[in-house]
Length: 231
Image (cartoon, rainbow, N blue to C red):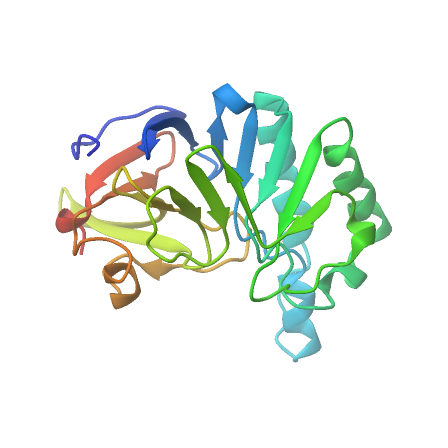
C-alpha cells in the first residue's frame, strides 16, 4: 500500500495490480509505459442541462473542462486517451456542444486513439463524436470501466471520490484518487462535477473499510493520506 504520509508534487506514483501509474494533480491518470491517459466523469454540458431545468449556472463548464484536458494532453502527449464514462452529463448533451467546443474536442482527438467508455449518464454515445465506444477496456492486468465492482486490476470512475481532512485546526475537502494498490476509483474531472465522501458506504463495497489511500488534489501537489485519517 502507498505511504499514507503527505507527499507529492504535480504528479504522484501509484500502483494498481502491479502497474505503475502517475496520478496527476489535474485528476487525470497517466500510464507511461502504454502512453495512455485516463480521465473520468467529464460531465460536459452539465451547465446547459441544469439551465434546461431552470437552474441557471454559468455556461462555461464545458470550455473549462476541455481547457484543462487540453493542458494535460499537451503535457503528456499520450498515444491513447480513455474517457471513463459520464463524459457527457445526459443523453443529449453531445447535441448541445457548441461548434467551437466541438472543434476543440476534435483537435484533442487528432493523431491519437480515443476511447469513450459508456457511463450511466451517457449510455448511448453517438458514433460521430470521433474515437471508439466501449463498455470497458482491458490492457494487460488492468480493466477500465465506468462503475466500480471491486475487481482486482480495476480502474473506474462513477463515484466522484472526495476526502475531508483536518490539519492545523482547519478542514480541507478535495477530490481524490481512491486506491489500495489493487484497484482504483478516479476523481471526477469535470468542472461542475460534485463528489462523494470516501467514508460513504459505497466505498466500503469496493475497498476493505478504510484500508485504502486517498490521493487528494491539493493546490500545488497531491497528498497521499490513509482513508482512516479522513473524516
